[in-house]
Length: 292
Ligand code: SAM
Image 1 (cartoon, rainbow, N blue to C red):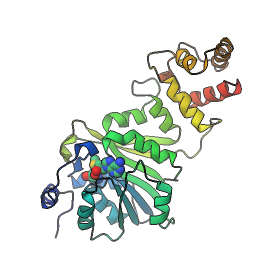
Image 2: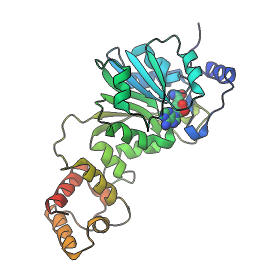
Image 3: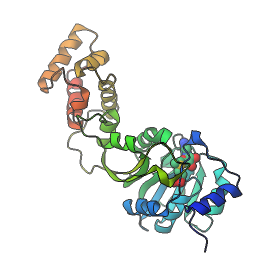
Image 4: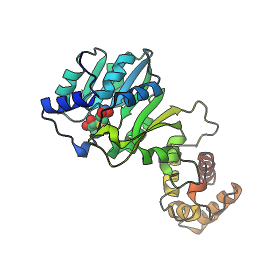
């Protein structure tokens, strides 16, 4: 019986057979531990009720494990060299579609509509290319596709930023942007030793699920994301200074800003990292109300 793709020997054999080298520029660190892959599939609770979007299948290590449990798997791979490899390694799995795509440029809505039946729950499961982890997550959130869950591996430090609480060092605009929409949980930590080549950082599996009810909504999402970003533009500066750079060139605007903070009982000396997602929403709506 052929060993699983992720087994170290098979991975090596595949790399040799195709004369493949790892492309560092594409974040190619392949998983060679079948147990870790099983844990990812379990964390994502993949069943025949699910279709899965995978980003960056590599030589198919995770894809294979997903294909065994899911209804359908659509995998997007940017590296053209890997397409013939994947056609070969994944040949036994009839429920897999591999597409040559840059995930950041892909029209996901269109692509999923074309390749899936639309009758199954959709989950994203991936060992992400680390150099574009945040852009990929934001791209997925911005597409407006109703994912049941995103269960993705990333650098541990990015996982900490995604799940950070207010008042901590890791808390920033990315935390607010993501937590506004998603419940974020770190499922488990993965040591660097299970990858080839071995990266310089440890990894974490993060599970993101859409918040069922949002108590409070910003008057406009784009404006909300913009203000949050602006409030963190200079982390060491106060909320007031960052807001002033965005809104307060004129005296009337400064007066309105002062009033907005006072009405929300936010000290101008506060730093953005102290504000909860809710407080950011209140702030954005108040600024809008005062015509800033
Ligand atoms: N899934 C495999 C595994 O777990 O062993 C490989 C994961 S590797 C960390 C990331 C993969 O993403 C690589 O195969 C890389 O070529 C691919 N990739 C990098 N940038 C991409 C992009 N913009 N769109 C799609 N795939 C990309």
